[in-house]
Amino acid sequence: MSSDAQPVALEANQPRQFYRGGPAIAAFRNRDVADLGPEDWVASTTTQFGKDEAGLSRLPDGRWLRDAVAADPALWLGAQHAAEFGADTALLVKLLDAGQRLPVHCHPSDAFASAHLGCRHGKTEAWIVIGTSGPDPTVYIGFREDVPAAVAAEWVSTQDSAAMLGALNPVKVSPGDTVFVPAGVPHAIGEGVFIVELQQPTDFSVTLEWRGFLADAEAGHLGLGYDKALDCLERRAQSPEDLVRRTQALTGPAVDLFDAQADPFFRADRLHVSGTAALEPSFGVFVVLEGAGTLGPVAVHRGSTVVVPHAAGEVVVTGDVVAVRCRPPSVSSPGS
Image 1 (cartoon, rainbow, N blue to C red):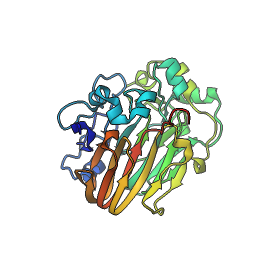
Image 2: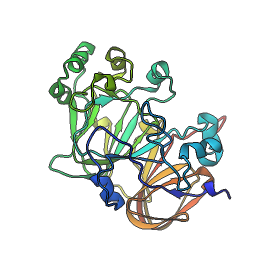
Image 3: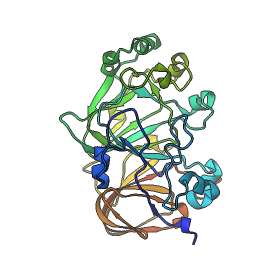
Image 4: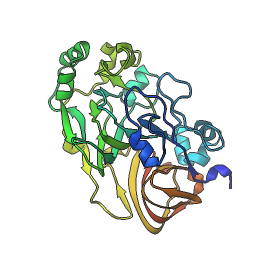
């Protein structure tokens, strides 16, 4: 069996960001260094917007994971996935520690990204809350009421932060909550919220609230200008009940963390293993939340992150382990 056909433990990968955070990642990973940044890009084959390498994950032997996957997509991703996506994992997983409230922003859809950014993927994403701190851990998701295009443009032009944030649905969160964020839906993550984030594999953000966060307005619109970039904003009202799930009390060997609306973009379940469990072959990114044991040949514990190639086959998990398993969208067999 190829050495690439085994699960691989990954070190932290924290490219520079514009906002504060990082201590929750350091504590989770049991690291002394708490100032490396608020995001850990796990098993990433995606670069930061406009960068050549920042954001990419390295394997223990020094290769970029991106290059290893490109060299043998079927081994890493499976033949069906490779037939649909080539060497594209179709997935980016992050740990994100909001040390301050993030700005109000949104992400383009597949159609917008294809038309204006030359990319197959937009950036639908979802959050799995794994920790909170402070008195008011809150996320803000979708407009409470429909917002006319001219009003949204005025808010951005005048940088009316109070109006933008006030127009969103505030949702208090606790560990086990999940939030699905469709492309276009405006959102912000509040201070003290620590998440595992799944998303499409891009770094496309339209930052409506740039003042006090970004260097200038030019950094906020993907080089398109706000007149064009705001076309990707979902201005219709959203109901948090359609986007937020409370999963902490759900038990069983595997708890599906998202509704079917997420399936075209990514999948995630929370595994509860006590003893042994055999997992079906799949490319996957694992974040261990609690306990200790093994994932195939890899020893794991709270804070471990592991990438599993499809060619690893039926991987066996042993021990007492709670982990989030993140996977790309499923690809149907030909003719199915």
